Image (cartoon, rainbow, N blue to C red; front, top):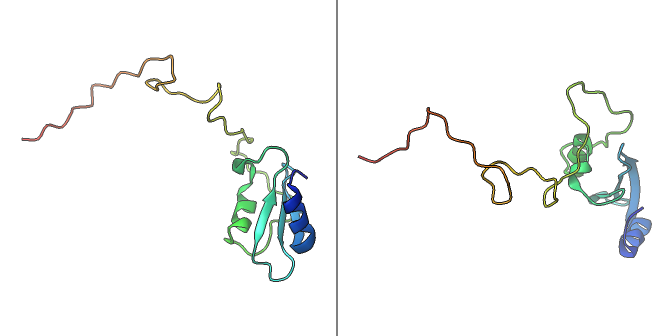
Length: 115
């Protein structure tokens, strides 16, 4: 578990583990009233590693945690880490950080001029 000492104490004192997702992230809620819900990330904390069904549970869109096997969705792609701020981040043509030139606008564009 990659949690600080304070978080570990809070989990021991007030937390109850609810489940775990395919990335190894562990989900908790308060033992007593169950008002607070939180996640302890496996590895680096990155919000994009939370599956949609667990996101819905964390944000109280659904009451029951998504336990059991996650259904296969044929069009769904595997998770890719957020690469913003890294050397391999997407930089479209015309970006200050890009080596590529901006794409030329097509012939279908005409600038608006007030009359």
